[in-house]
Image 1 (cartoon, rainbow, N blue to C red):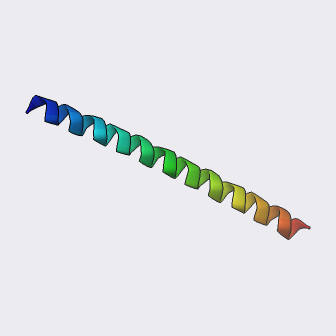
Image 2 (cartoon, rainbow, N blue to C red; image 1 turned 90 degrees about the vertical axis):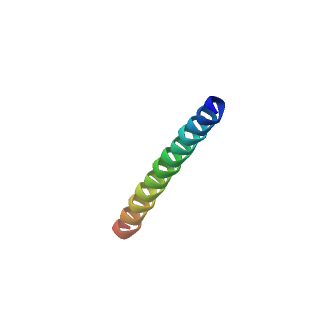
Length: 43
């Protein structure tokens, strides 16, 4: 039973890391798009 709990903990840690990476990437992508829009409007 203990092994199952450990496995679940590892899985949840992995999902949290994946979610964090995804949200960070999304944030970076949005900021890049906004920056590009700003440059396009200035031209």
